[in-house]
Length: 149
Image (cartoon, rainbow, N blue to C red):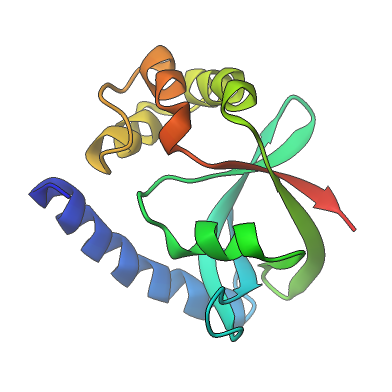
């Protein structure tokens, strides 16, 4: 991991602690929700703040950082809990195949502020902050569709 990505990871980890704390006392923060899944090794609940993104009438969660632990935990869990403020729901996360990710990633970046695309570059997941470059990185970016159970 390059130094810029490592610095970003440290900042994000500090910020995540604040977001989790605010959410747990009932304060919703921006578009963030808390994803709680059993740890893939420990089985203990693990919580991470994530953004649930609406695209084409569906809800998606898109990986923004390499080696994000929540991705591995979500892959191994049958269901997870999404919480926002004091509301929570149990959902199933369905990981999309790479070819289905590409158009969703392209649309997401095309309809988001420039800082969202830049995040994928800074974190090392993509080479350029354009919709096509992010879509081309679909093999490195997990995308999950949120489904009710």
